[in-house]
Amino acid sequence: MFRVPQTCAPVNRPGPALASFCLPLLSFSASILVGVKTRAMGSAQNVVLLSCATSVPPRRFTQQQALELAGYTSPRIREIFLNSGIDGRHFWLDPENFTSNETPDELHRRYREGALHLACQAATDCLRAAGLQPADVDCLFVASCTGYLCPDLSTRLAGHLPMRSDVQRGALLGHGCAGALPLLQRAADFARAHPGRRALAIAVEICSAAYYLDNTLETVIGNAICADGAAAVLLSTTSSSTESRATPVLLDFYSVLDPAHQDKVGFEQREGKLRIILAAEIRHLAGPIVDRCLDGLLTPRGLRRDQIRFWILHPGGRKVLDAAARYLGLTDDQLVFSRRVLRDFGNMSSPTVLFVLHEVLRSGQPRPGDYGVLLALGPGFVAEAALLQWQLPGQSEAASLFSQGVQGQ
Image 1 (cartoon, helix red, strand yellow):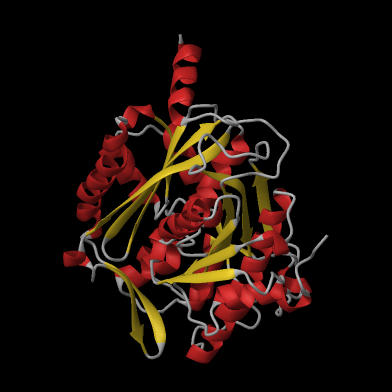
Image 2: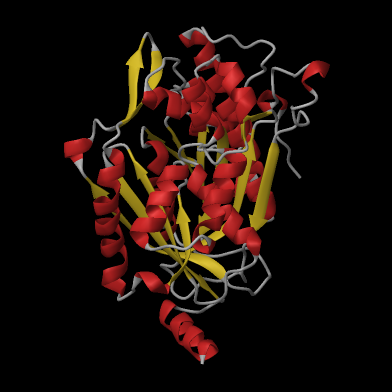
């Protein structure tokens, strides 16, 4: 057995006065196993998602509490907070010690402590769900955009768990809300290149270390929806599970980069702090770039959008999901997992779409042959997508389609 080391434990502990709205001190996390028999799925090139886990800080804040924490008094800003489609968010901070004029050093300390702890917890639970130990990981990738560390998070995490001294590592920085998709692609590339080896991919963000307080609309929106969290997925071409049920296989990825609008979303530096950039034009740019991305992902495989059962969309905000529903013609049922994550956790940037995937996995709804699309927009301006399919052990995509057709008759 293994445990989250003491070095990953929370530093700031809430006092008794906070008991009314603070969760127990241990980080809340969830994990789910989606394993199959110990053999390659379909072909040696198929990459199987073995397990998935999520983690958030112990302290949860309602939108009213977050509004008071930020110190906003404007009725208009209050309306933005309370009509965001969010019930509560988790932050790596103790409100008893919080001040709105934190220094860059204090924000950096929050990122270092929070990111390492949440990444440790998500990694631990993800491996435990697959019945594995940190020493079983061959490659570790970590995506993050809300802070910078050297040595990077993957190196620090490998030492904390601990992993083998020969574990390969990689960091993906600055991909924002879309970061989980290139993260998965790099991990899948490793798994395909090294059949049988395991790649652990972690997306972690401490948005409470990357806030900036002013009254501009973009910073207000960022402060109204952003939150802290981490998610981990384990990939390989083989599984250590003895179960023989349908498991998600990563089939393909597709990206569309629009550099003409790279200044419309991301972060900028002000007074040594990160300040969010969310241009209003994004709502008009999103539809066309998503169209191109989905066409590039689905058309080569002869798939139509109505063949996708699970739409695993990054919930960038309530209006983002509303626009996606209109533009893609999706029903409320098709966005229920994305809206649930937004309601319960807010927008945690890169790990958020993996939280949605986790909800789909633990719902028990996927059947053999079902397709799912992961989709997120991020700085660049970029659309990132991944195609997955639930397959039985030893089954190919074509066989899954045939089985699905027979079941539908």
